[in-house]
Length: 402
Image (cartoon, rainbow, N blue to C red):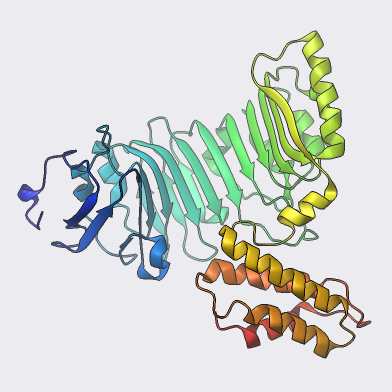
C-alpha cells in the first residue's frame, strides 16, 4: 500500500488483523494496527496519548478513503465505530459513499465552523463540545439517524432533518447548590419525538422547564439529577418514560398522569418513591395491561448514592479508582482530627502527592482530583473555621506534579 491510490487494495478486501501502512495524511504517513475482534478506531492529536491509535494534528488534511479497503470478517465496513478529535470535516463527504455505523466527533473549534452532513449516511452521530472554542453550525443528515451532543451545548446550531432520537448531556457543575442548569435553545432540534437527557446523579440539577420547548415528545429518558419533575405532568402524550440513576423522585407525578404510557422503566432510583412506583405500576396493570416492558428495580437508600457517586472517581479504571478511594478515606480520617489549618494542609497535601507517581493522571483525572480536594475541604474537622475552596486549591496546586 503506498501513495498511489491505484495500488490500494480493493474496497472491503482487508478483513484480518495486522499492521498496515496507510496514506492517511500523506504517503505511508501512518501504520494502522488492527486487533482481531476490535471494531473501533480513534484518531486525534498526539496529546491524547494512547487514547488515540492514530495521531493526527487537529487541522491536518485527512484522506478518509484509505479506510475503504478495510472490512470486518463478516464484510461490513471497518471501522464500525470511529472516534475523531479534530477540525477536518472530510468524513462527512466520505460518509456519502461509505456508511458509518457510529461516529464520535470532538471538534477543536479553534474558530467558528460550518459543516454539511446532509448527504452523509451516519447511523449514530455523537458530538462532544469542549468548554472553550468557536461555534459549530451543522446541517444534519437527511437519512434516518440518532444524534447525541455532550458538553457545551450552546456551541452548536443544527438545521435540517430532525433526528429519530436526540440525546443531550450538558456540562453541568458538580456543586449541588448551584442554580439549576437551563438548557440553551436548540432550534429545530426541539421538534424531536424521542429525547434523552443525561446528567450526573449528584451535583447541579438540570431544570425540566426546558421540556416545554419540546412539544412533540412521546418518549423521554432521564438519567441523573433533575429538578421540576412535577412539570412532567404537562407531557400527557408520553408513551415511553425511563428514569435511571435518580436520587430524588419526590416530585414525580403518579403514573396515571400519562394515560398513553405503554413502557416504563425506573432503574437505580431512590427507595421511597421507587416503592410507591411499584404499587402504581401494579395498579395500572389491573385496569390497562402494560403492552411493553415495565419495571422498577434497584431501589437505593440515601447512603448508596454517597458511596457510589459522592466521590468523583466512578469513571476511573477500577485499579486507579481503588487507590483514589483509599487515599480519599485516609485524608478524610486525618481531616476529622484536624485542629488547625496546618493539620488540614498536611492531610490534603498527603492526599495530593499520592498521585504524583501514578501513570494515567491527565486533564480529566486532574479535574476529578481537584474536585475531591474541594469535597475534602468541606468535610468534618475540629478547626472551628471553614477551610475555603481557595485554600484547598492552593495546597493542591503546590503539591501536585500532574
